[in-house]
Image (cartoon, rainbow over all chains, first blue to last red; front, top):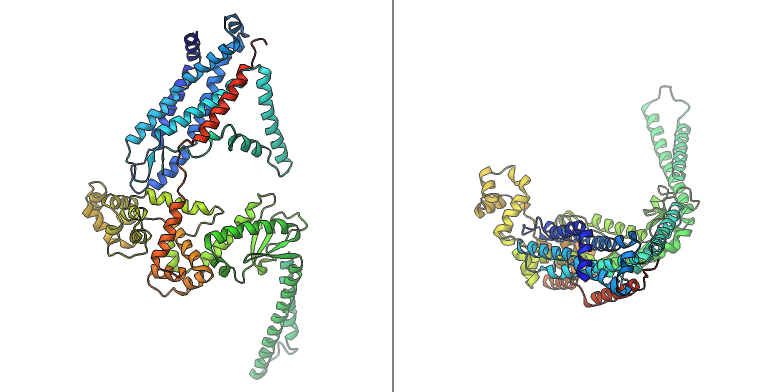
Length: 214
Length: 377
């Protein structure tokens, strides 16, 4: 049954997955373009920092799209397929989850191979070290976290997803209105800090994502 | 507005005075002696009127001073409208802590007899202070209304660095190559130097990273080798330098020599080009890193560092000037600077165990939430 679920999830998300894998392969290679000069390495390191934003963005996007594609068909079919299966709900959810997790290995492999190739083709000055595997591992964990978070939201009723999205929308709307009215307070910053700064759930997305570092 | 009114009043008084000073016999023939006497009288009245104008302006300044509160944080002296005093004091404390961390006690000497006036930008505010009117009271810092609080601290730091840059002589400015970059983040200054040191391909920069104090002095341009291009750069570095300086070098250079260096990679051509233009050969480490060294010397030298540095403009060697400013040997300054730079090594990318564990815990928690979903809608 797992194979069947894995296959159907691959069918639903293969285009997105291939795009994410290609992007993952290309980002490390693009980030080291120009790293051929001996004396400009400082500027290349700072440009690597600029590329660093691409990895967490890709991890978040891959997790989101894969989790949505995992449940779209069930929602559309009013969960009749799930009801007709002779398995417990938790086993069904686990299989859906595991399938997505297996598919997430593709963009992770893309990043890993791209990073290894990128570090092979350039001269790395003494004092700098390549972090291809560490980067790929961090990407995998981030993508898995994003996937799990959105998977949890998608697996619930549309009402649950609506409530979560509604709360986010209300916060943004209050902030926009407050700023327009000239109130000097930032509602989103503390929320953002709680989510993305230790011990927030998405802390792994922040910080330096560097292919080469000291 | 007050200032404009004051100036026009002064002009009016001066004009009236001159008119009153004209003798009734204007238009009639006069002898030379009487004309000279009138000129002397007019000169005297002019002096008296200028003195009166100065008094009026002093009164005006005093009136404005009464509308401002003065405060002192460290050596920073500020004037601010009463509603701004709380913010000004907090931000001045932040700025002072940052300035002490980067410039040490020498900042106190720099601030001697200098004063900042904090002015809000919002013209509709009744407590707003006219920026032009208070310019005579000190350096005016305009703070936009509703701006983040730490913008005030940043403005103060920028103003202090501006004063520092203006106080430097051309020799120091040439060595630093660019104005000092003000920052609240004192670690960032040396952290950037670490990155530069570790990524530079220059043999002297590499030597400095590995612990050679002589190489550090060379990389910072504190020594004057006979042939900088040979002493500071490797063959590949020279080729890249020539390519980088192509516009400046190719103008007077033989095209074949230029192409020989950049395209055919003939090092002798690169050396010849660079030796013809030695003043264009920069020290391997950037102005920002030289600035971090300069600040280390000032900090080591304490309160008299800046005055000793500025008083040594006759010294031909920059290394000697920095020694005098720091009050210690160049090696001691270099050692301190190098230790500070190496201590600010940025954290590498590696995924830490705590971050990975936290991620796994959150994944497990969110997955449990998914299991609670129901197939019955």
